[in-house]
Length: 114
Image (cartoon, rainbow, N blue to C red; front, side, top):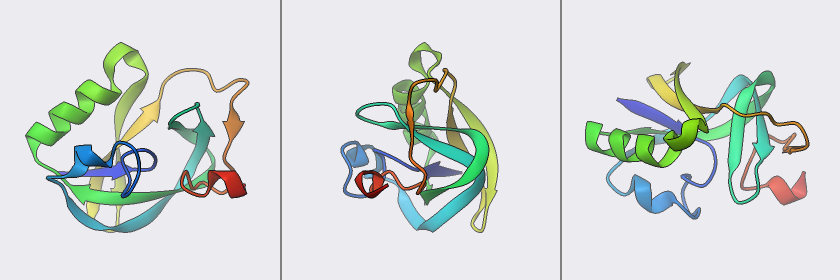
């Protein structure tokens, strides 16, 4: 199975250690989504933009660990999207983004240059 990561799970980011056993497939961007700064991490919702991301192949154990990290408390929900590498899971933010800053570049790593 595959997963798309767009924030703290990306390479050289704060939570990238969760991806240690994952196989990097490539960089990608997904259209039809917007990226928001939630403080120490981002959230993606459906919208008008494009989001910079990385696609990985993962096993069911890693997916379970990521679900425990991301879906607790209903903050995120997994959504299946298409990539050049096949379908992949994307964690969509489930709460309001009112008052949050949109990262117009769609790139969490380059958010300060936005």
